[in-house]
Image 1 (cartoon, rainbow, N blue to C red):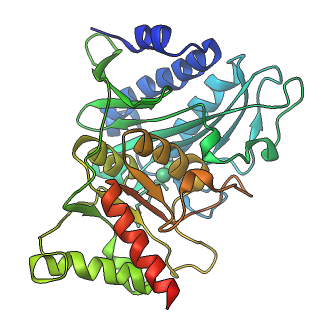
Image 2: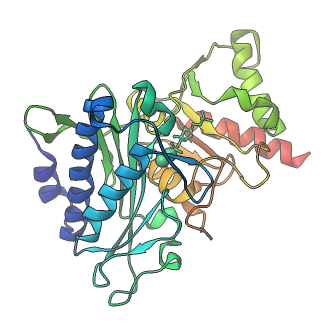
Length: 327
Ligand code: AHG
Ligand code: MN
Ligand code: MN
C-alpha cells in the first residue's frame, strides 16, 4: 500500500512542493468530512454574497476558500494564493518559493443536490522571493506549473495529481483518513465515443462547434459513421475524472451568451491544472484551436473556451475550427 506521504517522499524530489500539496490535500480531508455531514453541518445554501465574477457564492464556496487560505497562509513555502473566490491574490510568506491557485469548490450548483463537487489546484514557481507577491506574479502560462491536481468529492473522495511526467490517483480511505495510491500511470485512449457539453447553449456557439455537435448527434447516420453518447456532471472535476478513467471529450466552448465572457471556465485555476493532467495522461487540451497551456494570462480570473480529452477527438474539433476559419 502506498500512501500520499510515501509517494511524495519517493517521487517528488521537492520538499516545498510536497509540503504545499500536503497542506492542500489535508484541507481536502476536512472539506470531504463536511460534505459527508451535508445539511447536518449547516454547509448548504447561499452565503448571500457574490464573488468578483458576479456569481452567487454558496456557503461551502466561502468555507472551502477560507480553509485553504488559512492553511496555506501558515505554510512557509507558500508565497501567495489566488482563488476563484478572491478578487485579488493574497500574499502569504515572502520567502516562500511557490504560488498556489485554486477553485475551492468546483460544481457549486451540485452541493445542494448531493452530487459530485471538487477542489482544483495549480502550483506555480514564485520568482521574487523576499518580496510580497502581487497579482502580476501569478500571470504565468500553464506550461510553468510545477504541479496540479484535483480532489473529487464523489461517492468516494479521489485525488488526481501530477508532479512528475505522469498522472497518479489516490483514494481517501475513510477508515484511516489517508490517501492511498490506486492508479500509478493514468492514460487516456486517443479515441472516444463519449462527449460532455451543456447543449442548452447551442444557439450561442460558433458555427464549427454547432457543426461538431450536429455530427455527433447524427451518429451512424452522419459523417462520423458511429453513435456517440453524452454525459454532463455540471462539475468540471467530475467530467475530467470520467475522462481520466475511460476517455471522452469535454468542452465548454466559446459562446456569445454573455458579451464579457469568452467562455465560462477560468484559465488559471480550472483550465490550466486540468489541461496539465489531461496532457500528461496522453490527452490534449485546447481553446478549440490553440494549446491552453501556452496561453499567457493577463488576468488571474480570465476565462477561456475549453476543449479537452481524448486526443484524436480534440484534434477533430480543431480541424473543424481551422477549416471554418479558412473560408
Ligand atoms: P464553479 O462551480 O467553480 O463556478 O464551476 C462550475 C463550472 C464547471 O465546473 C462546470 O463544468 C460548469 O461550470 C457547469 O456549467 P453549467 O452550469 O453551464 O452546466
Ligand atoms: Mn469551477
Ligand atoms: Mn468554484
